[in-house]
Image (cartoon, rainbow, N blue to C red; front, side, top):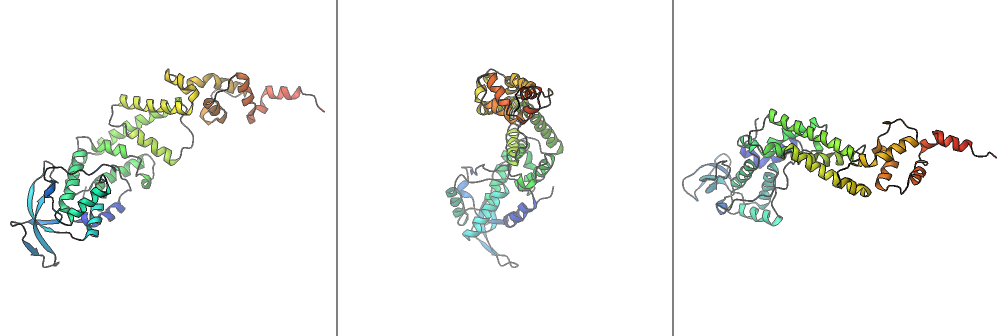
Length: 353
């Protein structure tokens, strides 16, 4: 995988983002600088090594003035180091603001508050090195996602590294790439937190685990009458988000967690059956007698209906009738009732005028 040079990171993040997917798989993780050496960070786009702090040199081809500054190399995976480097200091607050935002976006991190970010940007225009700030983001990404560490060491941003896997996952799940800013976050998080460098085999293994959990989820949703037809894109996305959030658990723990969530949802939607769910019964089991009666009264073939698609059965599950007579009255409002033998016999027995 070939990535952009570190110098281009500062100036061209916008074009990098446009070239990839719109995924932001790890957003919301705060930037927290290490306390050790944080005050020694210097803001600059670094060049070569220098020998005397404060010396300046002019690049004859560009007219830019470089200053010999302390550079804290936080990008080193095995620890920070202090160097003296020729640095192009940034003083324009608007430029610094854009560079910080671009860098945060490239490594999908945020500050805890706007005030924290403004504090860093103020330091960058005085004595904080922008290159060191970016290296801090690199180091944090490596420590959080060791599976991506090798590629991050090759001047790849986190966005560079993640985008191909995000695109492959979106394609495998038949999800539009432009909507992938949510679906798949947990998958990519689990992929990157492994200790082994991510490759196709590791991706495939994790994908098979996610598919196994999804198959289990389909079964559980069916048993608890939560497999509603024609789900919206938002509903599909939310389901993937939750399933993928379980991928770092063992399969047994993941299934137990999913089952617990489904049971809670079922009790919320079908409150009259909450006590039965607490005893270990599914909505399918609890509704079986009523479904059988419904099928019998409408003279339907057993298995010819999907209960979750029958508005009458859903309403009955939400608010069960107090008696079978009341249930029969509800069934009589079904359009199919008129075609039953009982309905025809009742009509033929009525006197004509």
